[in-house]
Image (cartoon, rainbow, N blue to C red; front, side, top):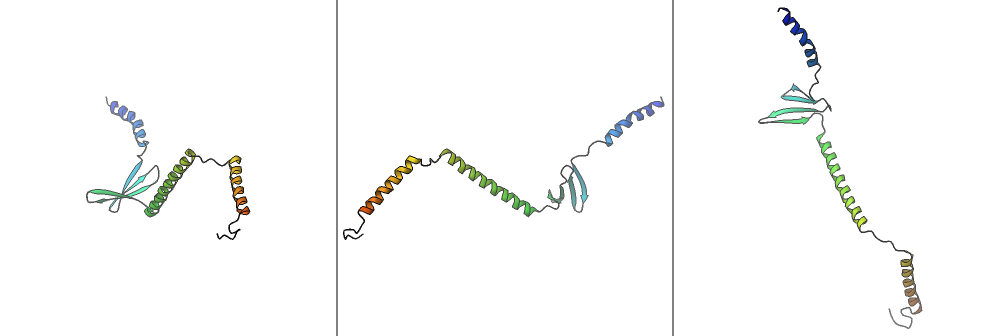
Length: 131
């Protein structure tokens, strides 16, 4: 009976080793001045969290918030411009403009030639008439 606690302790040793090798959670929290620092072990991002009366506020450590806001604004602008261009392409594809063929060009040139002949044959002011 005295060996029973010893046997139980030996059986528990592998379980203790497994508990030490258990993965750490994604976030690690450490105390800091007036708050806490939260480390995201997957991405390396750090947040500094402080308590303001009833709420806890967190800010990225070393983050350039103005640069991030500017980048997001530029991305929004680019998305809007892309959407506008896609709408224009859709309209152009739907309403395909037919380019003139040779027959259309010949008809246009014939009309211009008739106008020029009329103008040269009977120019304004030929008979002393004013324009």
